[in-house]
Structure formats: C-alpha cells, structure tokens
Image 1 (cartoon, rainbow, N blue to C red):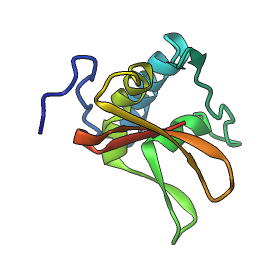
Image 2 (cartoon, one colour; image 1 turned 30 degrees about the horizontal axis):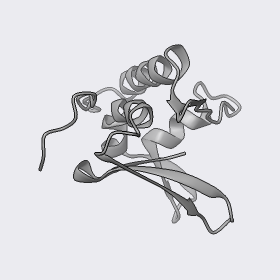
Image 3 (cartoon, rainbow, N blue to C red; image 1 turned 90 degrees about the horizontal axis):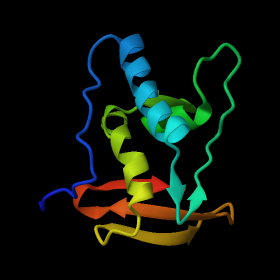
Image 4 (cartoon, rainbow, N blue to C red; image 1 turned 180 degrees about the vertical axis):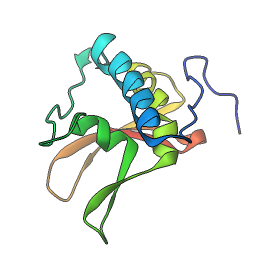
Length: 127
C-alpha cells in the first residue's frame, strides 16, 4: 500500500459507549460539514438535514456511518465506515488530487451521482 496523502486524517476509534461514540462522530461531522463547510468543484456539498421524529441527528450524518441492511430494511451502524468519517470531507475537498478517482455514474433510479474513490484505501464517497 502506498503512503496516504498528507491531507488524509487518521481514522477514529469507534469502540466503547455507544452514546459517546455517536457524539464524537457527530462532532467530526459537524466540524467538517457545518462549521468548515465542504465543497466539490467549487459548489457547496449539501446533505439530508431531516431529523427523524424523536431523533437527534440528521439523516445525512446517519447515512455516512451506517449501511442499509436489506434483510431488516434498516440502517445499521458500520464501524468501518464510521471510523473513516474523518476522510469524507477531505476527499471531497481534495477531489482533484490524482489519488482520488472521480467519475459520474447513472444509478438504477436514473439519477447521476459522482463517485470519489480513494482506491488504495478502498473508500468511496458518493455525492
């Protein structure tokens, strides 16, 4: 494996007390996407800001740290995704770096999404 780019932060541990882990992850999300802001090719990145009734966090945040389980029809916490939350905004902000492979893809719902793939670390951001 090659050396990570200097702009790629370390992953964060996601073990321990569930509430504290989620709070810590949300602090990272809030810093990267709300306070600092994130832009792809000069355009601000938006996310689903809806909060489920009785919930505390935006849907966009949950989508980054969870994976949809087709057996249960729910989103389940994915430690591998969650520990790499720190990578999401930097990959978007550094999408022109040659280590980030970028392409558009028409999904089955006919919507075109942009994929940003950090191939050597097998991490993808879809916007």
